[in-house]
Image 1 (cartoon, helix red, strand yellow):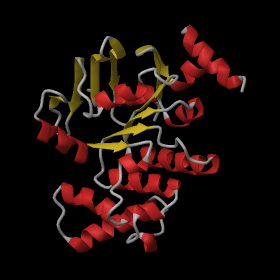
Image 2: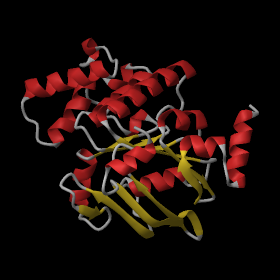
Image 3: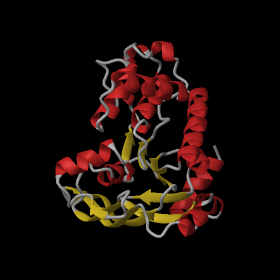
Image 4: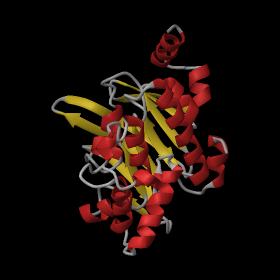
Length: 266
């Protein structure tokens, strides 16, 4: 299903962002950012280093409160909550249930002092699972799904390669079947061959599970592969937003044109 048909298939957006801004002193890391994200849609945010991509993502996922604007999320029952208007404990519940957060560095998203299986199982326990056998069975199933040898589920994450650690982090996030996943450069720092395999895995999981996702990346090829729509940021502002192929094949803003042409010339 493409982005246009996804919009037509749902009455309300999953995430509504209006006038979002975050300042550090007198500098605006991001400002006046507005968009809607629909169920099952993947939005990629691209731009040069310092453009405000990661700051925006952190403000969207409940990690860093914005100085201006609103982030509204539609719950499973259809009610809408103001992400920064609800109590902190309620926001933490969102991050364990309806949301997943995949960090560029797996060390930020995994617990290195417990086993691979426990990393996945802990998230199930956070949403009320208590049967040890069932938790272990679910963890094993997700490790296998993410192409991690189940025989290694009792090993610690630091014994895994970088690509395996990233897959483990994805398994930890997806085991509770979130509706929205935030991804910050999920293939950054990995070898090209490992990147390609992980991207194929992410693309199939997003499609299979009907996930909505917001993806921060500096790689336009990653954006084209995974995203329905593309937001281009520069100097903290969203300078262009549209269907991914449309933006990349016919960029309208001068900065987007420069970004695309620089990639083509490499």
